[in-house]
View: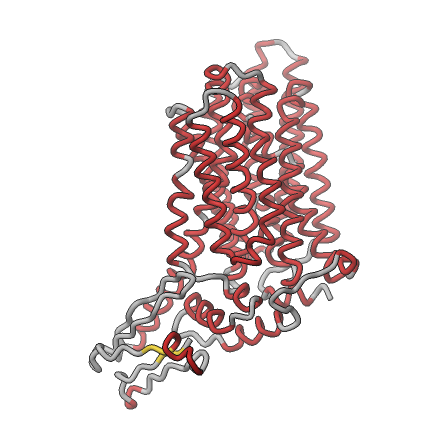
Length: 517
């Protein structure tokens, strides 16, 4: 994109370097000047991208360079955070979907006369829909872009919540859960990829953590509203995040790396300039991204036989392994059915305790977001998984002792299990909740990102479905035995991270992907 500012005098020495020279018939679209602005004000008007973007619509040149510099830093920070917060509405939708079944279980079962197995099917159908969405997410986002994919994903989400709110039997209930699962499956892949692709390398960790922070906020919101809201009204409220996401997408730029991969270098540079600030020199980042996508054509595909090469199979195994182990820790089984777990442990106000768990998870995730670019991904993953191992064992011991001791001791073991579950959720929020998604979006090479991302996301949702489907049955079999299994899976994650997961802190996406060659 190219801009001229004739109103700025040569004495001020303020020259705007063009991003790309205008050429041919594109001049009318790419070359803009605002002759209506006076030379005193130096007001610059910038157009919206054809794909929909928001820009700083004007700036006043001032002789006070210190104030200009501070204002520019503020504008740049606002721009990148606003883009992330808009797409993170999808993450709130994701979290709300996960949290919805917890406070509504007894009410839905009573109103629609469902058995516990029928409700378990309802809870797990979101995962089935998400698996289908995960398979489609990579290819859709490659062909129509990250923003267009999020817009498409919002439609089944909204329709699914409407179907649940008007359900009179299991048919509408199951159909709605499948539809919202399909949308969430797409969202769960596209949001972290978009955030990773627009973020500067020194902010990628904290911005990527906003994805999981908003996910946990959505879950907590479902717990909170479920305390006093009927389940049908709660389903109506579940439509709001995607209803707000659709118009919000018109005001953010498309992923610059996707634009570069598709050969749209003009809009690529414009998008990157908007994200980094109009006064920022982006030439080094532009050249690095162009070199990275240089070997990939617009329709680049990769045969399955090529996945035997280390540069492809190693990052794919890491991303898939982390997202699978994240779910095998049993966290979704705990969050979906925590009210029932608390009842089994003897906690009287189980729904309030569940909301407390959700609130703690939000707080810990916010703290972890500030640490991920300082401490590094590996350290937080190892600490998180180790704490989850210990806390799962603690909960298992509490349940075993409760069965072996007199009833007068049961309140003490209820408190012990509550402490264990709180530590479990805190440990998950510290690292295993967000970092697998961050690493998956960082390490996959550009020409297998759609295939690899779909495979990793599918593995995550498939494992989540297995955990969700079996959690109620396992807890009925043995609460203590269930948490022993979850503890063993968390211990396996410690070993996996220690042996195979590389540190990605402080490196560009292109540097990370070159390291696998």
